[in-house]
Image (cartoon, rainbow, N blue to C red; front, side, top):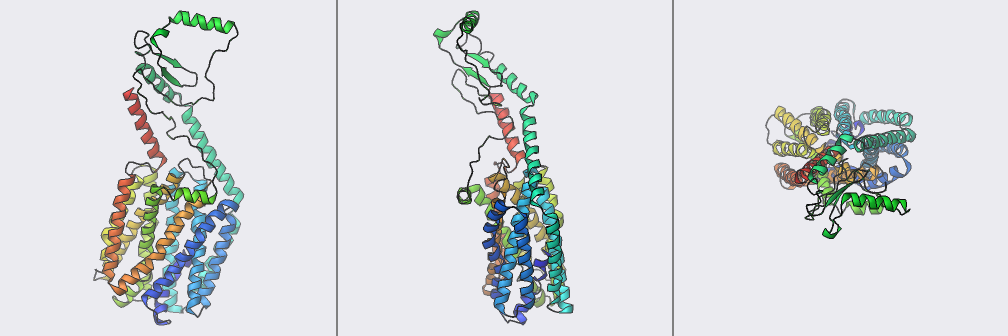
Length: 514
């Protein structure tokens, strides 16, 4: 992020002073970054799932090094567009492979904290980058910021060569899968839960078991499968006679029907005399599912049909617009309205990013520990952002602008942090992990689409309508999206904890009804 952030305070001024281009052209240049992300993301997602995480990582760093040199020595506008596009390709690799790596190693219940910590670390680079770019550009000229960027690229490349190993990644993934299976087994073997269910069913069927009432009886199998079966009145036979008949049949060598281990376990199905059928009770709180092997085309086709996925992706697009739309506007706002240098612009960008360092891991912790639901946390962040955004160009003092930008950054951090864990859970609730690269590539595709739209959307409205029309329209969009998102997911689980809680409530209602 240092390398991506270094150019933010530089390029808008270069486009205005050296190339004499309008804000719309500057917006297109910034949008080339997202175009590279958009094209590279699906390729990287599929590739990393097939060949591993390490090789794509190294390719991405090589592309970042190349884009840095193109920015430094390119003297034509077309070269800058190519450099920005290649920079976007490298960003696609970093995001897709990095997030897929997190999903490989950590469970969904840890995803919020871990991804928040990663975003927080990412924030440090985003904080430092614009400051380095603005200060060195102001005091040492155009080339020095890119030399510094090249040094960071080389250090990062060496780190990935030494530390990222596909064998270690595979081992960590196996350990995560084993831990998940052990937890599931512990739940399955929990005798207290099973005994409670059996006791409740026995109590509910005690009267039904009386041969004088409706001729029904209860049969309990050794695998905890309980069935209440109706019998016809003419088959009402004395228990002792029935037992003697069974013994006689066994002595004659006939097979006595027994339930095998292949029958369903951990379920209680109650079928009463009045034919009222209740839902199955899943003790582990998660429905058993079989993931059929899917190729990439089948996977994306299946995903694109799901409304819950589209709801999540719309939030990703709006977050990306919020992050990217200010990049071409803030440097010119600082220069033209407040008459300050690029150093102040750098500090403003740092203020925008700084809340992510604190609030991303904090909101991840609160949602992972279930103090606040992921849906409500995201909604709260969207509301804060929507309220603060229209004040960007309304404030008359620079200090108030800094405060407003900090509030907006904090709102976006809280709004965005739960989105990736929600996406990974609703697509892969059983955490098979076979499609992590493709799942996270979907995030990056729509994030890239958002940062492609953002600079064009903001500069066009600012140039042809007004700055306020841009900020106000974005506030309305993110607020409406947040309300719809909250309503849709309010009663739908977005984490393993919420799914288990919903299942426990369902089991409780079943017990009460029985």
